[in-house]
Image 1 (cartoon, protein in one colour):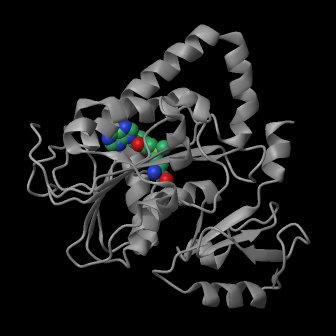
Image 2 (cartoon, protein in one colour):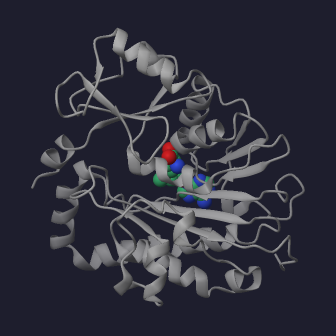
Length: 317
Ligand code: SAM
């Protein structure tokens, strides 16, 4: 099946930005424009609420929203369902003194989702090291009215976990650069590349997975952090299960007392879990979430959640 055919089976996902309006208001708005609640595939004008993600609507794959006033004013974010999982799993705190980090933020879909889940309160630091992507991020955050976000054009690895500005951080979202192999319309190209250059592909994945592991270990050094969500849009175990296993074995994880969040805390009703064969401890696979581009009407995606129950600890950073 071609990437285009796969993409044609993925609904147009519309996440309602509840900082600017409610999902009920959004539904009324789309009904006033001729849409009606049904299944997204029953008719080009049908739409539905998603069964797993609150405030996510599904429209027909052919629907375009780029010229729609709801999109132009930041009231909706066009975001694949699987890409909504990390912020939901992180479940950030909503108090005025909350401190949360989105370590790799641009273009800002997950940052705006986190900001909305924090009810636009507390402080959300959004780090992005690439200058051009940082400017896209700031535009997106302004459009979505994310008043509690402080975007910072910095490399996350250069941020000192004990810096008083960041040391109170309790929740970190980590969605680092990856191969992007789960993105459906890139799949055909990727398969070709894999066939032609297996060695290059292996080398690229090794570099990426080393970088991803370094990012998780750095997040684990923040003294007050209790929850870290790691995600990729990759289908490769090397960037997913293998990175998680290495992270659990790392000095940072052992010193900090991190473990994987149990199944009931990570989308328990989502059926597709991690690949048990790729884990050191196969039982841990149920603590991981996967999305299959062939089977789930989403892009390929992966989510893991590291937690610790103890209070701030004194790591040597
Ligand atoms: N979370 C974003 C969203 O949902 O819109 C997508 C993030 S994208 C997969 C990864 C981003 O991380 C890229 O913009 C990349 O430039 C940035 N990045 C990679 N390494 C970084 C680092 N060490 N520090 C900060 N940002 C980094």
